[in-house]
Length: 496
Image (tube, rainbow, N blue to C red; front, side, top):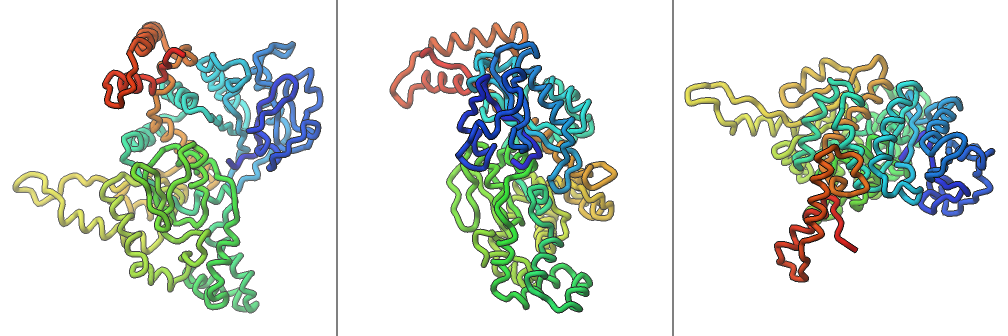
């Protein structure tokens, strides 16, 4: 994930696990002497000696004069905040710091995951209220992730504004029920370093080596006509030039949060593979890319509506290509229209100015209007319209909001600047992901028992005992074995 700084787990002897090596040095070759912080032996935390924005943290359960691992974590975060760190992420005002669920993978807190989740949330919440940085807790264990989301849902007002919760909860509920689909625009990839539409045109213009007078007058044309002119200059190499500019990047935080919604269906106008990488990072395997691949039953898929950088010839950019789009790519439009009819579509990162997309929406609106049930026997008024979805807007454009309000919920993210609104978009998606999390694999897991209260703990103990008492049968049709397996999905573990 794109971040400005990261905290990396280690132990007292500065042994850093292999899973961290690539994150630290971009290669598998990790040299401890190159990275060991000064005063490591006495502090147990510190910045990499290489000068990189990596802070190492002794996450073991040992105590020292400076306290336990959580005291060391707070000290390390304070050092990050005091280091003069500035965000290098395009469009982001506050620096983003990523850190793990500390000490649960060999650090001595394996059987105390509930306490770790509770303390970690409390520490990070209090810290960001006092310092101008954002913290992303990265959980690689599904049960830990689910427990973190559960703890936030218990008291959501401690982590979000009420207005954010009121708008995010219904979208998260759609996701949890499998009724949410995504429409992902180019704005989501800008924090990952991808060019904006205008930035892409400028870069292509430089490649085309336009006449000085033509280059100066290029902005007077519409963006599609600009691309058409560049196509005339670059010819069949235009798609390859675009693919070259959409270089390999790491997913931005927005990609990670969208992937965490676990939507089966998604459509994008982007050429990059950042959403696919984010889905794969979640452990589900990469999303199947339409139209070049055929999705398996129950798998997640992504329709790349305007082409894929992996296939430069498929890229749609110019006016001529957009005009030809309906005839050449009718099935892809049909896929989007089917989602408008059958799912709640969450639209992120687009200004909703694509003529082809707007035409598809209008066609579905007319189709539904003609076939909509009437409210009552004698009324000529249509029944309450169910919106096609929700548009998350950072542009602050009231006219566009008014244009689309008939068919979409329109959520305007507040803020004086675009950077402020883009940050609130990430916060909002975080809230949606919280409500979308339906994994209960922590509930009967003894390691998370701390998160249960009173009678809940007693009930969990009884269910675990029941689970272990259920006889297992090798027969695949055994109802008792099926019941035991279902309870194990809630975290109950059989006797070993």
